[in-house]
Length: 383
Ligand SMILES: *Cc1c(COP(=O)(O)O)cnc(C)c1O
Image (cartoon, rainbow, N blue to C red; front, side):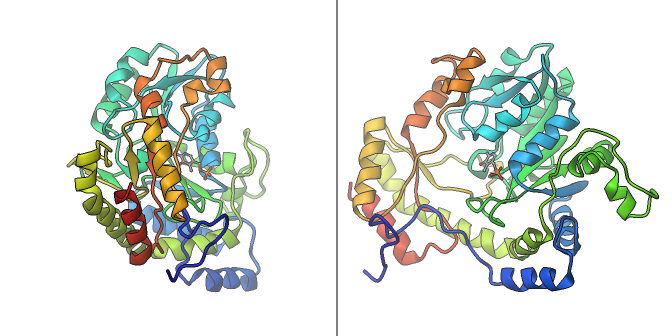
């Protein structure tokens, strides 16, 4: 074995943040340029690149996906009494951003195939109080956006796509992040492209651009001031500080410029896992990810759904004994302490409850070598 252990006997971690090689150069450039607060040269270049790559009306870098979600909740004027529909199987920020504004979360179960919010359940969850639906494109595979958009439009409900996993994925040829009034991206180091901590708000409805700029700039019209559109800037709305430093934008630019190579590598790793484990999956009853024909996925992760919780625990242990770290994923939000306070209970989302006990994610990162991946595959096959 030419690999050396990292810590606690782990040779192959679950994630390793990728570097393209340009990050230091761009960050040094930002430092010597003298503008390292928000909205400098590198932030502008990231905005242009994201808008060009995705065809969204406007993109705004934020300090995290969590903060982009908070901005979306502020812009939709979410307030006490409103309800927001979220999948129970997601990261806590998907719901917290709306709960912060006083909304009541309504948890939707997921589809057993793609693990995305089950669009067939939506009509039963919508009430006159429903203000927004927040689909999460789990693992970078698109939700059933045709049905979701139709239901939302009929009922006058806004869509906010939590696209933390889905950057560059598409549904029926249309890029994820371009469906909702807003979409949010994460550039946390566990995501496909990253800058350590970071995010973006994508705005598809031009009517929201001015207010988004204001909310992101502490409730002031400072962005207009910098463009020379007003003589002085002042307090015009509620807001907070959601701009990342231009240093982080410099790091992120290197990643955005390499998205083609990054995504190609992830695609190759994903398919190698899939092909190598297909037969094993048929024999053992462990399910591999489902990607519908009409979805072009973003290759965010590779997961297995084991037949039972015991089988998952056994596989995690088996891999750990071989120096490989595999991890489970979300615990259902509706069963959390907070979820229960909102009246959710066991049995509300049976698919989520079952899947969350059985899903595990294999090491999946850009610099995973063929040798490392072989070790993971051999370890899975040998259980
Ligand atoms: C990572 C993640 C977030 C939060 O991203 P941050 O940038 O860390 O705030 C939100 N939603 C989902 C689905 C995520 O995977």
